[in-house]
Length: 232
Image (tube, rainbow, N blue to C red; front, side, top):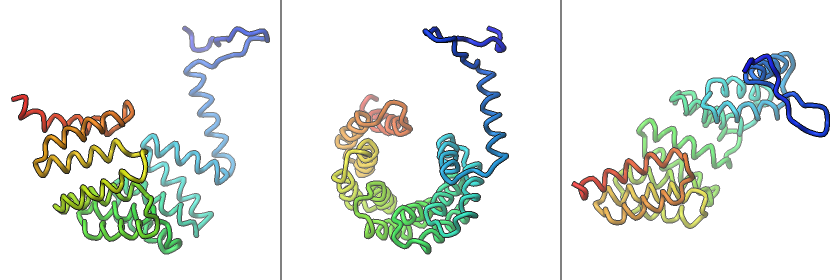
């Protein structure tokens, strides 16, 4: 169909034009141009930042966060979020600088300690990562993500029993991340040779993970590792 021809909905009123694909792109570009011509509100910036981050456009998100921080230099949350974007791009030095600033501005921001712990973990400094996870849990013992990260890092340190215990505690807190918790606990069981427990946990994980979740592929790979010797 010619992109210049409008489609119409049938209704009792006069036809409502529906833009074609090329017209939608044109409208999107026109809106972006208009946004550039005027100062965006904080709310608009935050919406755009979330959209850019969800699409993996981390450098773009950082640019918008720069604008927010210039307006609100005492916003710990914005520093934390920009640090997270830097972490996504493996710019660990800048990420650490932002996490440190976020904590300096708000020492009770548990998310910043968690993210700083992740930054240390990515750099191989697992003991410092553990310290930060524990600080986060001192502030908010109900942060399920921190318990999971804590358990994974304990496993990386070779402390398998404590890793399993920590993931058990994460499971008690709530159902939101059960798929991930079962997956990580299963992998821990696999590493210590408890393959039956590992298989059971992997299958539980798959039952909780939503379709298309990035963890599905990871769990399927882990499950294949433990089943391959049995099949062979």
